[in-house]
Length: 143
Picture (tube, one colour):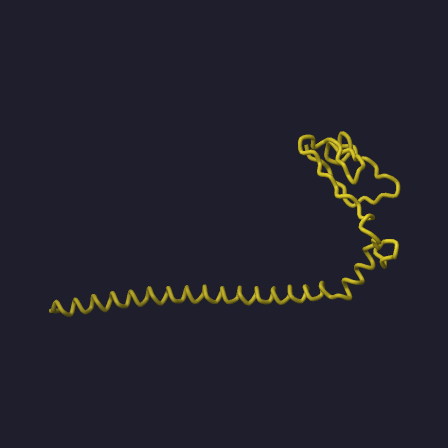
């Protein structure tokens, strides 16, 4: 016959082996999670290195200078553009009347009519640009 202490020890050994089995599977799962996180960290570090290289290329002064020459209409400052006295400085612009936002706005002493609607033409029909003007963007107004 098996004594009571033998049954107790066998039960404790079974519980210990079950706990060990459960713990080992938890550790394996956590190890897989750690490995996937490490892979994600390496991918992010590689992406950061690529972005740093692109940033260095985009901020190259020679490239910026060449693009500015190609796309901007800039030239050296002439003597006529220099301000000779404080009297030549234009007046401060008056603010738009907050009580009448669609009314005229005073701009350096001249009256400029304010548009009553968003640009985009009348009734969905686009307005052709004025002669000599440049169209930067066109869009449709959703109603």
